Image (cartoon, one colour):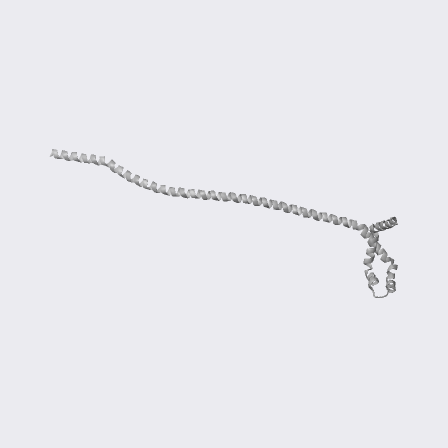
Length: 192
């Protein structure tokens, strides 16, 4: 008995695995949903409801339409599924590519920031060096100003010394002139 129940269960399981029957039933119910609602929830008697529902069961176009949609669903859905999976892979690829590009841009931006930081440090060092050179130049200029004053005083002293030397050089000439005048005077005195 258990084997028979197991066989029946396997048979129904195989039938339910077949996508045509559930798809056909689903499409048929969706197409005739209003009639099914009347059949299930109407307040009239069950005989009247079945009588109203019976013409739908006699209509072959309804079966053909449901069968056609079932075949379309069964045969084209895998292609649609493949298309969606391809589309999903494309979106994932584009997303990864964009993230890769963003990472490259981020890395390049970080490299530029590091380079600019290094450049800033070099500029700061150059500014410090220039400030030190300016301080040295200012001290040299102060020293140079002091030296200029010293040079000016030395030149003034030189001029004074040159005048004194000239005056001293003039002394022998003046002495010789005085000697000459004295001798003339003495010679005039002795001659007279």
